[in-house]
Amino acid sequence: MPDFEHIYSLQSTDLEINNQAKRLEGIQEKLGDRVSIEAVQKVLDSLFVRLTEFTAKQKDLEDSISSLSTRISTAEQKLYSGQVVNPRELQDLQEDIAQLGRQRDTHEIDVLEILEQSDPVRNQHDEIQKKLTIAESVWNTQQVKLDEDKLLALETTKKLKTQREEIASLIPATELQLYEQVRSRHPLGKGVAKIKNNMCESCLVVLPASQIQSVRSNSSSARCTSCGLILLPEA
Image 1 (tube, helix red, strand yellow):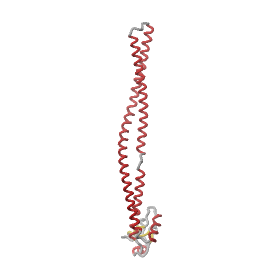
Image 2 (image 1 turned 45 degrees about the vertical axis):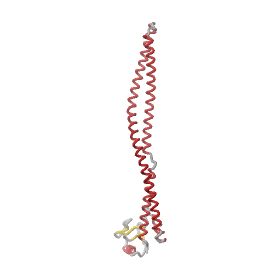
Image 3 (image 1 turned 135 degrees about the vertical axis):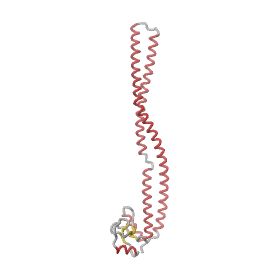
Image 4 (image 1 turned 90 degrees about the horizontal axis):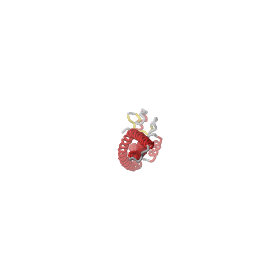
């Protein structure tokens, strides 16, 4: 008489082992996955480079403004000190001061333009930095949870495999061999299916009455003509 009860129990255990394997695979894919965070970091780095360029240009201009202001101050001191009395020299000195002042004014305008251009970039950088900080915190929390889930799945799988060995030891070798053979060829890893409402519970094909009677009388093993699974009587 086929050992229907233990074979069905074995299949339930095998399917749960498969589920845990898929769960572990999904967990493993997420563990250490920083693709989304790295994408944000890349944008942040790009903005930082732009800000660095703005800062460098601004510093160069401010240094130049400072140098021009010093030169203007020195020239003005000379102009008003009374040391220069030659009209031509006085005119040249005044023109130099005026030219230096125009250059300084131009640089000051350039600084204002840089500030106008850099402020939106800086604001965007700061906003993304805040979001990245939050994302990093969430990611770290998720990684801890994934590690816990992985350990639980591994522990569950270990228990299920022990359980499987115990159930398999109760099934006659020939029936176990047939079950393993059928299961290895099924896309979902199934080996058996119960008869429900005169149909195979797996593929829902209506079964011949003679086959149903044979299975229900526990007289012999039978396989579904559609999906090939070993048929078991409905509990």
